[in-house]
Image (cartoon, rainbow, N blue to C red; front, side):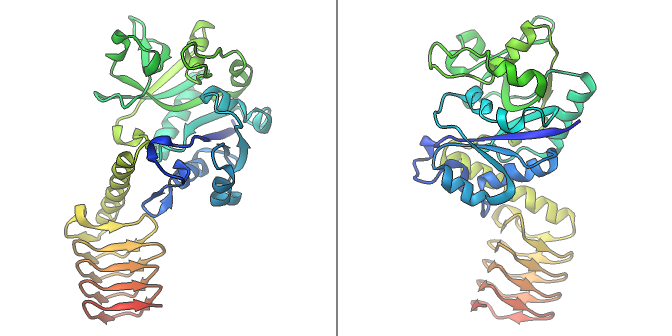
Length: 334
């Protein structure tokens, strides 16, 4: 079974209050969209299709050859956005996975769960939900009295009773491709907003007697959507703590993980100790049995085994051999 990935990245991100497209805002040193592309590398069988709109040329330049691009010229809703990928993908994949570029914390393991259930159950749609008290503007999944999914209602369209539902649509979908493409053309615009909601496909599939499956995420943090700079900071913390946890489990000592800033691409050897306030960025590699002092800032630096980097060192583009002792407060540029 061949899987295609569609990433929705056309929005302006008005609430970010920025000239930069939302999906290009830096998250732990990388454009937010890069995380969605990494996920596509693992989940799909071909380069993903990225739906672009606002400042499309900037987004294309940032992504390069990692994706195929389709422009959504008019912002007419999520259903309309996915429809733009039809010409690029129709007949090329059995399954289409759709998610948003402003949800950078979705894990490959979760998408794999969705795909496995989709295949095993022969579903038309398999979707991801989350149980949460704070709806954050997400749509609600409405179920019948037996617990079967019936439809998704967007928050702006929901009644007060529906707004009280705690099962939220996390906006990650796996579709049967043969059904998806003609179904998109049957979506009717919202009477309130005039937009074509991708979420309407769930109710359409149920009405046709087709199977809709649901995966409920066990880690609510992964469905954090980034719509404001407050959300961006929340996502940054999640990425940072994931990295710090992985390093500690691999044998690295972080004296205070909460105040240690290590970007995802950094490599650190076992039995190395990193003190609070340290910042390791870019293409930095630290060997084994090293000590990185408080508030050291290393950018694109290679540190050999058994080296000691003093407190407050600022180094960029430097290579330190083994057993190097860099005095506190040094400022070095390669």
